[in-house]
Length: 333
Image (cartoon, rainbow, N blue to C red; front, top):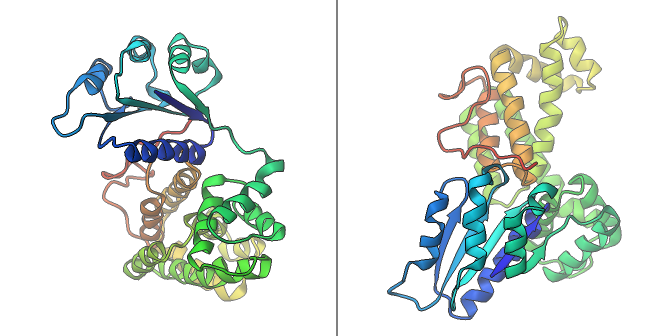
Protein backbone atom coordinates (compact mmCIF):
# COMPACT_ATOMS: atom_id res chain seq x y z
CA UNK A 1 0.00 0.00 0.00
CA UNK A 2 1.26 3.48 -0.89
CA UNK A 3 0.16 6.90 0.35
CA UNK A 4 1.24 9.85 -1.82
CA UNK A 5 0.34 13.34 -0.66
CA UNK A 6 1.65 16.90 -0.78
CA UNK A 7 1.06 20.44 -1.90
CA UNK A 8 2.80 20.18 -5.27
CA UNK A 9 0.42 18.61 -7.84
CA UNK A 10 3.14 17.84 -10.39
CA UNK A 11 5.32 15.90 -7.93
CA UNK A 12 2.32 14.07 -6.45
CA UNK A 13 1.18 12.97 -9.92
CA UNK A 14 4.65 11.92 -11.06
CA UNK A 15 5.18 9.87 -7.90
CA UNK A 16 1.85 8.11 -8.52
CA UNK A 17 2.75 7.52 -12.18
CA UNK A 18 6.07 5.95 -11.12
CA UNK A 19 4.30 3.57 -8.71
CA UNK A 20 1.74 2.56 -11.37
CA UNK A 21 4.49 1.92 -13.94
CA UNK A 22 6.47 -0.17 -11.44
CA UNK A 23 3.34 -2.22 -10.69
CA UNK A 24 2.79 -2.83 -14.40
CA UNK A 25 6.38 -4.06 -14.76
CA UNK A 26 5.67 -6.52 -11.93
CA UNK A 27 2.75 -7.98 -13.84
CA UNK A 28 -0.16 -6.06 -12.31
CA UNK A 29 -2.46 -6.00 -15.32
CA UNK A 30 -5.71 -4.61 -13.91
CA UNK A 31 -6.29 -1.15 -12.48
CA UNK A 32 -9.42 0.36 -10.94
CA UNK A 33 -10.03 3.83 -9.56
CA UNK A 34 -12.02 5.30 -6.68
CA UNK A 35 -12.65 9.06 -6.62
CA UNK A 36 -13.82 10.44 -3.29
CA UNK A 37 -15.85 13.21 -4.92
CA UNK A 38 -17.87 10.96 -7.24
CA UNK A 39 -18.02 7.50 -5.59
CA UNK A 40 -20.00 6.38 -2.55
CA UNK A 41 -17.73 5.66 0.43
CA UNK A 42 -19.65 2.47 1.15
CA UNK A 43 -18.46 1.08 -2.19
CA UNK A 44 -14.74 1.49 -1.36
CA UNK A 45 -14.23 -2.06 0.02
CA UNK A 46 -15.98 -3.52 -3.03
CA UNK A 47 -13.36 -1.99 -5.32
CA UNK A 48 -10.66 -3.99 -3.58
CA UNK A 49 -12.59 -7.20 -2.87
CA UNK A 50 -13.98 -7.68 -6.37
CA UNK A 51 -12.29 -10.56 -8.15
CA UNK A 52 -10.95 -10.35 -11.67
CA UNK A 53 -11.23 -13.17 -14.19
CA UNK A 54 -8.40 -11.74 -16.29
CA UNK A 55 -5.65 -10.94 -13.78
CA UNK A 56 -4.34 -12.43 -10.54
CA UNK A 57 -3.21 -9.04 -9.21
CA UNK A 58 -4.70 -5.60 -9.50
CA UNK A 59 -4.04 -2.03 -8.45
CA UNK A 60 -6.66 0.13 -6.75
CA UNK A 61 -6.01 3.87 -7.20
CA UNK A 62 -7.86 5.87 -4.52
CA UNK A 63 -7.92 9.63 -5.19
CA UNK A 64 -8.86 11.80 -2.23
CA UNK A 65 -10.08 15.35 -2.90
CA UNK A 66 -9.95 17.73 0.10
CA UNK A 67 -13.53 18.97 -0.26
CA UNK A 68 -14.97 15.44 -0.08
CA UNK A 69 -13.20 14.25 3.09
CA UNK A 70 -16.06 14.61 5.55
CA UNK A 71 -16.63 12.64 8.75
CA UNK A 72 -18.22 9.75 6.85
CA UNK A 73 -14.90 9.16 5.06
CA UNK A 74 -13.01 8.32 8.27
CA UNK A 75 -14.28 4.78 8.88
CA UNK A 76 -13.97 3.52 5.27
CA UNK A 77 -10.38 4.84 5.07
CA UNK A 78 -9.44 3.27 8.40
CA UNK A 79 -10.97 -0.01 7.24
CA UNK A 80 -8.98 0.26 4.02
CA UNK A 81 -5.76 0.64 6.00
CA UNK A 82 -6.57 -2.45 8.11
CA UNK A 83 -7.86 -4.61 5.25
CA UNK A 84 -5.88 -7.62 4.03
CA UNK A 85 -4.86 -6.70 0.49
CA UNK A 86 -3.17 -9.95 -0.42
CA UNK A 87 -1.05 -9.52 -3.55
CA UNK A 88 -2.99 -6.47 -4.69
CA UNK A 89 -1.61 -2.92 -4.56
CA UNK A 90 -3.47 0.07 -3.16
CA UNK A 91 -2.31 3.56 -4.12
CA UNK A 92 -3.88 6.42 -2.17
CA UNK A 93 -3.34 9.84 -3.75
CA UNK A 94 -4.16 12.88 -1.61
CA UNK A 95 -3.42 16.28 -3.13
CA UNK A 96 -2.66 19.12 -0.75
CA UNK A 97 -4.19 17.90 2.49
CA UNK A 98 -4.32 20.61 5.13
CA UNK A 99 -2.57 20.10 8.50
CA UNK A 100 -5.89 19.30 10.21
CA UNK A 101 -6.52 16.40 7.82
CA UNK A 102 -3.02 15.04 8.48
CA UNK A 103 -3.77 14.90 12.20
CA UNK A 104 -6.89 12.74 11.76
CA UNK A 105 -7.09 9.11 12.78
CA UNK A 106 -7.79 7.96 9.22
CA UNK A 107 -4.67 9.69 7.86
CA UNK A 108 -2.49 8.23 10.63
CA UNK A 109 -3.96 4.79 9.92
CA UNK A 110 -3.19 5.09 6.20
CA UNK A 111 0.33 6.41 6.86
CA UNK A 112 1.03 3.61 9.35
CA UNK A 113 -0.04 0.91 6.91
CA UNK A 114 1.60 2.40 3.81
CA UNK A 115 4.83 3.42 2.20
CA UNK A 116 4.34 7.17 2.64
CA UNK A 117 5.58 9.62 -0.02
CA UNK A 118 5.32 13.32 0.87
CA UNK A 119 5.66 15.43 -2.29
CA UNK A 120 6.50 18.81 -0.80
CA UNK A 121 6.89 21.99 -2.80
CA UNK A 122 10.40 22.75 -4.05
CA UNK A 123 11.87 25.65 -2.00
CA UNK A 124 12.68 28.77 -4.02
CA UNK A 125 16.41 28.43 -3.29
CA UNK A 126 16.40 24.91 -4.80
CA UNK A 127 14.22 25.62 -7.85
CA UNK A 128 17.11 26.44 -10.24
CA UNK A 129 18.86 23.18 -9.39
CA UNK A 130 15.58 21.29 -9.81
CA UNK A 131 15.12 22.73 -13.30
CA UNK A 132 18.69 21.88 -14.32
CA UNK A 133 18.35 18.30 -13.06
CA UNK A 134 15.01 17.88 -14.83
CA UNK A 135 16.56 19.09 -18.09
CA UNK A 136 19.40 16.60 -17.63
CA UNK A 137 16.85 13.81 -17.13
CA UNK A 138 15.23 14.87 -20.43
CA UNK A 139 18.55 14.54 -22.26
CA UNK A 140 19.94 18.08 -22.49
CA UNK A 141 21.89 20.57 -20.40
CA UNK A 142 20.33 23.80 -19.16
CA UNK A 143 22.55 26.67 -18.04
CA UNK A 144 21.87 28.39 -14.74
CA UNK A 145 20.90 31.62 -16.54
CA UNK A 146 18.36 29.80 -18.70
CA UNK A 147 16.95 28.02 -15.63
CA UNK A 148 16.50 31.38 -13.90
CA UNK A 149 14.65 32.70 -16.94
CA UNK A 150 12.26 29.75 -16.93
CA UNK A 151 11.67 30.18 -13.19
CA UNK A 152 10.91 33.87 -13.72
CA UNK A 153 8.52 33.44 -16.62
CA UNK A 154 6.57 30.65 -14.88
CA UNK A 155 6.60 32.42 -11.48
CA UNK A 156 8.16 29.30 -9.95
CA UNK A 157 5.21 27.06 -10.81
CA UNK A 158 6.54 23.50 -11.28
CA UNK A 159 3.84 22.35 -13.70
CA UNK A 160 4.45 25.30 -16.01
CA UNK A 161 8.24 24.94 -15.66
CA UNK A 162 8.07 21.24 -16.53
CA UNK A 163 6.00 22.10 -19.59
CA UNK A 164 8.72 24.50 -20.77
CA UNK A 165 11.42 21.87 -20.20
CA UNK A 166 9.43 19.31 -22.21
CA UNK A 167 9.03 21.76 -25.07
CA UNK A 168 12.79 22.42 -25.24
CA UNK A 169 13.45 18.67 -25.18
CA UNK A 170 11.37 18.25 -28.36
CA UNK A 171 14.16 20.03 -30.23
CA UNK A 172 16.76 17.57 -28.89
CA UNK A 173 19.43 20.25 -28.26
CA UNK A 174 23.00 18.92 -28.37
CA UNK A 175 24.73 21.95 -26.82
CA UNK A 176 23.89 23.48 -23.42
CA UNK A 177 20.79 25.69 -23.65
CA UNK A 178 21.48 29.27 -22.55
CA UNK A 179 19.17 32.31 -22.33
CA UNK A 180 19.53 33.15 -26.02
CA UNK A 181 18.81 29.62 -27.18
CA UNK A 182 15.92 29.44 -24.73
CA UNK A 183 14.30 32.47 -26.35
CA UNK A 184 14.80 30.88 -29.76
CA UNK A 185 13.40 27.53 -28.64
CA UNK A 186 10.26 28.59 -26.82
CA UNK A 187 9.87 32.31 -27.08
CA UNK A 188 9.84 34.22 -30.32
CA UNK A 189 7.95 32.08 -32.84
CA UNK A 190 5.41 30.84 -30.33
CA UNK A 191 4.80 34.33 -28.96
CA UNK A 192 4.25 35.61 -32.50
CA UNK A 193 1.69 32.89 -33.23
CA UNK A 194 -0.09 33.46 -29.91
CA UNK A 195 -0.25 37.18 -30.67
CA UNK A 196 -1.82 36.48 -34.06
CA UNK A 197 -4.41 34.24 -32.41
CA UNK A 198 -5.27 36.95 -29.87
CA UNK A 199 -5.50 39.56 -32.62
CA UNK A 200 -7.95 37.35 -34.54
CA UNK A 201 -10.15 37.12 -31.45
CA UNK A 202 -9.93 40.88 -30.86
CA UNK A 203 -10.90 41.39 -34.50
CA UNK A 204 -14.06 39.32 -34.06
CA UNK A 205 -12.89 36.28 -36.06
CA UNK A 206 -13.70 33.54 -33.53
CA UNK A 207 -13.42 30.65 -36.00
CA UNK A 208 -9.90 31.54 -37.10
CA UNK A 209 -8.79 32.28 -33.53
CA UNK A 210 -9.99 28.84 -32.44
CA UNK A 211 -8.20 27.11 -35.33
CA UNK A 212 -4.96 28.81 -34.33
CA UNK A 213 -5.60 28.04 -30.66
CA UNK A 214 -5.86 24.28 -31.22
CA UNK A 215 -2.92 24.36 -33.63
CA UNK A 216 -0.84 25.90 -30.84
CA UNK A 217 -1.80 23.03 -28.57
CA UNK A 218 -0.78 20.47 -31.17
CA UNK A 219 2.63 22.13 -31.54
CA UNK A 220 3.32 21.84 -27.77
CA UNK A 221 2.93 25.54 -27.02
CA UNK A 222 2.79 26.52 -23.36
CA UNK A 223 -0.72 27.10 -22.02
CA UNK A 224 0.89 29.10 -19.21
CA UNK A 225 2.42 31.47 -21.78
CA UNK A 226 -0.97 31.92 -23.47
CA UNK A 227 -2.51 32.79 -20.09
CA UNK A 228 0.19 35.41 -19.54
CA UNK A 229 -0.33 36.99 -22.98
CA UNK A 230 -4.11 37.07 -22.57
CA UNK A 231 -3.59 38.81 -19.23
CA UNK A 232 -1.60 41.60 -20.93
CA UNK A 233 -4.58 42.15 -23.27
CA UNK A 234 -7.60 41.69 -21.00
CA UNK A 235 -6.47 43.85 -18.09
CA UNK A 236 -6.06 47.01 -20.27
CA UNK A 237 -9.40 46.16 -21.91
CA UNK A 238 -11.02 45.98 -18.48
CA UNK A 239 -9.58 49.38 -17.54
CA UNK A 240 -10.74 50.90 -20.84
CA UNK A 241 -14.25 49.48 -20.45
CA UNK A 242 -14.56 51.09 -17.00
CA UNK A 243 -13.30 54.47 -18.19
CA UNK A 244 -15.36 57.25 -19.81
CA UNK A 245 -12.36 57.76 -22.11
CA UNK A 246 -11.31 54.28 -23.38
CA UNK A 247 -8.69 55.63 -25.80
CA UNK A 248 -6.96 57.55 -23.00
CA UNK A 249 -7.18 54.56 -20.65
CA UNK A 250 -5.44 52.33 -23.21
CA UNK A 251 -2.71 54.92 -23.65
CA UNK A 252 -2.26 55.05 -19.87
CA UNK A 253 -1.92 51.25 -19.90
CA UNK A 254 0.98 51.68 -22.38
CA UNK A 255 -0.82 49.97 -25.24
CA UNK A 256 1.01 50.76 -28.47
CA UNK A 257 -0.69 53.29 -30.75
CA UNK A 258 -0.87 50.73 -33.57
CA UNK A 259 -2.99 48.38 -31.42
CA UNK A 260 -5.37 50.84 -29.78
CA UNK A 261 -7.76 50.77 -32.75
CA UNK A 262 -7.94 46.96 -32.55
CA UNK A 263 -8.76 47.05 -28.84
CA UNK A 264 -11.35 49.81 -29.24
CA UNK A 265 -13.08 47.68 -31.89
CA UNK A 266 -13.01 44.71 -29.52
CA UNK A 267 -14.69 46.80 -26.81
CA UNK A 268 -17.51 47.67 -29.21
CA UNK A 269 -18.10 43.97 -29.97
CA UNK A 270 -17.48 42.67 -26.45
CA UNK A 271 -19.92 44.11 -23.87
CA UNK A 272 -19.16 44.17 -20.17
CA UNK A 273 -20.76 40.79 -19.40
CA UNK A 274 -18.63 39.00 -22.02
CA UNK A 275 -15.47 40.80 -20.92
CA UNK A 276 -16.10 39.89 -17.28
CA UNK A 277 -16.73 36.29 -18.32
CA UNK A 278 -13.42 36.26 -20.23
CA UNK A 279 -11.60 37.57 -17.14
CA UNK A 280 -13.22 34.89 -14.96
CA UNK A 281 -12.22 32.25 -17.53
CA UNK A 282 -8.65 33.58 -17.48
CA UNK A 283 -8.52 33.14 -13.70
CA UNK A 284 -9.81 29.57 -14.09
CA UNK A 285 -7.24 28.78 -16.81
CA UNK A 286 -4.43 30.18 -14.65
CA UNK A 287 -5.49 27.97 -11.74
CA UNK A 288 -5.77 24.93 -14.04
CA UNK A 289 -2.27 25.51 -15.43
CA UNK A 290 -0.91 25.60 -11.89
CA UNK A 291 -2.79 22.47 -10.84
CA UNK A 292 -4.92 24.43 -8.37
CA UNK A 293 -8.22 23.66 -10.14
CA UNK A 294 -9.59 20.75 -12.13
CA UNK A 295 -10.21 21.02 -15.85
CA UNK A 296 -8.33 21.43 -19.12
CA UNK A 297 -6.80 24.93 -19.41
CA UNK A 298 -6.81 24.64 -23.21
CA UNK A 299 -10.59 24.32 -23.30
CA UNK A 300 -10.98 27.24 -20.91
CA UNK A 301 -8.61 29.34 -23.05
CA UNK A 302 -10.70 28.43 -26.09
CA UNK A 303 -13.68 29.96 -24.28
CA UNK A 304 -11.74 33.22 -24.02
CA UNK A 305 -11.18 33.30 -27.80
CA UNK A 306 -14.95 33.01 -28.31
CA UNK A 307 -15.93 35.52 -25.63
CA UNK A 308 -13.46 38.20 -26.72
CA UNK A 309 -14.71 37.77 -30.28
CA UNK A 310 -18.08 38.98 -29.03
CA UNK A 311 -19.90 35.63 -29.06
CA UNK A 312 -21.94 34.64 -26.01
CA UNK A 313 -21.44 31.00 -25.04
CA UNK A 314 -24.59 28.87 -24.64
CA UNK A 315 -24.01 28.43 -20.90
CA UNK A 316 -22.79 32.00 -20.32
CA UNK A 317 -25.36 34.26 -18.65
CA UNK A 318 -23.37 37.20 -17.36
CA UNK A 319 -20.75 35.27 -15.39
CA UNK A 320 -18.37 32.49 -16.33
CA UNK A 321 -20.40 29.43 -15.42
CA UNK A 322 -19.39 25.77 -15.61
CA UNK A 323 -19.63 24.59 -19.26
CA UNK A 324 -21.29 21.20 -19.84
CA UNK A 325 -17.97 19.43 -20.47
CA UNK A 326 -16.02 21.06 -17.59
CA UNK A 327 -15.59 19.32 -14.25
CA UNK A 328 -16.46 21.51 -11.30
CA UNK A 329 -13.34 23.61 -10.52
CA UNK A 330 -11.78 22.46 -7.26
CA UNK A 331 -9.32 24.76 -5.55
CA UNK A 332 -7.16 23.14 -2.91
CA UNK A 333 -7.16 24.76 0.51
